[in-house]
Image (cartoon, rainbow, N blue to C red; front, top):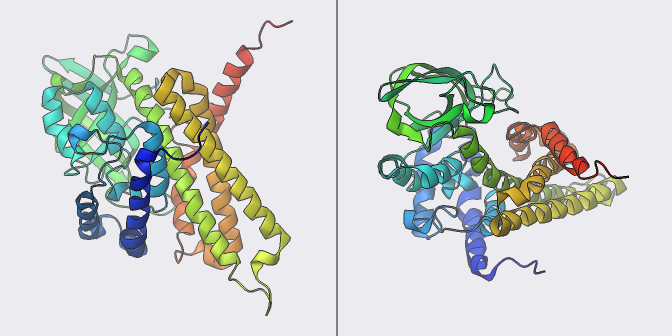
Length: 399
């Protein structure tokens, strides 16, 4: 068992780490204060530098101009990118575009590749993924009200979505809609590409997250579809395959999220340690001399390391044995890593005192925008329930 990063990805990891330190971290606070949309010129320049350095699109297939990394390799890269709220976007590895790209690559037609996939891979446009609905539980993606009624060669879409991340400024949405209401729960819905300039498509608002509506990619929108007409050729995959495609999309996506969260943890841990070793509480002692601080540092280090090993094991299992073999692992890492991240962030804020709740450090941003990690992609409680049921089923019937 070798715990070293694969030799093939080490130079990439080193180059990304250096790029973040030299180019991204110095402008991070400026971008977060100005807003994503208002910082477009800065972000475009950073993306151009990433491409010039040959680091664009770690998860994007080579034939589309990316690095074509496997899940374990990309997980390690994602950890590095997670050190900054801008990391994934600047390197072309951001959600929801990364997930949409994977789906388009596997299920898209030649025409869909040309019109949507290729410009998305080049970073020339952005996309969003519209599945969650305010009227239905997000933990059960088979419960959908949004419908796509077929009329000849068109779908007519009517429905209401929210928490459609990055819809603000997106060129198209991948919409999960019911196309066969009478079918079984897992074959009722399809995924359909909807250009955002289609008549009837309405971005109602950017939903405020603890008071912050965000803008551009860094936002979560409420959408309405009023008799939106798109060609049947805009469907991804067979009719009724929406749930299956969604599950394929979410599996690798959770690896990406969890490794990004590890990167967040490392950034926060570094910020915490730097602060407590410098913050004086008497003339000759710093916060780091207090046992409670030392205990929190030790616990954080252990929890982050354990979380990393769990995620990498899940990624390795998917790479080698397929997603079905890693189903329990993926649920375990989702709730475990999210919980570790929020605990590390909360303790770092506590140790920074009043400074911790300001925007003078990155801690406040992470606290606001990462709290949702325990909710999206399935609430922690649902993942715990699913894993427990699968484990306990193996014990049923024993004497």
